Image (cartoon, rainbow, N blue to C red):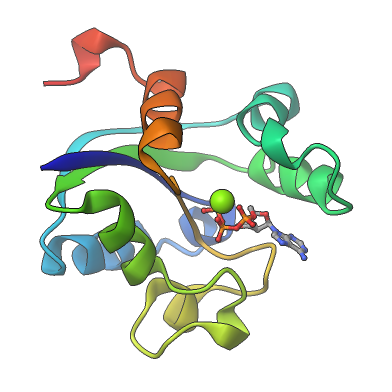
Length: 137
Ligand code: ATP
Ligand code: MG
């Protein structure tokens, strides 16, 4: 079993889609083992997405992520990192497979409803960015 970090982004929390999105994770066999709603500052969003600091969309991305509250959560299950990304669908909703979260809910390549860790090392880093050991059982 494996754990990964998931974020329900501001475009989705604003539209009250948290439950519909989490039903897709649960239907895929992922379990939500930690969860909280937070409002990131732009600096915190910038730190979280620092790997993208040189990209042209970095300012837009971090402004968006700090625009309204997000739900940060830890998903657990067999191959959770890949399974989460499969359920999310492609970054650009225009390319996302039918039935995926981004195909159904994302508004654009930037405002694409969810984030998911992309590898074991980043999953570990991203989980500890938001959750202390005491919050993880
Ligand atoms: P995430 O890391 O959020 O799970 P991802 O791994 O599918 O998404 P990345 O390439 O890591 O995609 O990009 C991180 C985020 O940056 C995207 O989810 C999206 O919100 C934003 N982004 C990526 N490409 C663009 C773009 N061309 N224009 C605007 N925003 C973008
Ligand atoms: Mg990514």
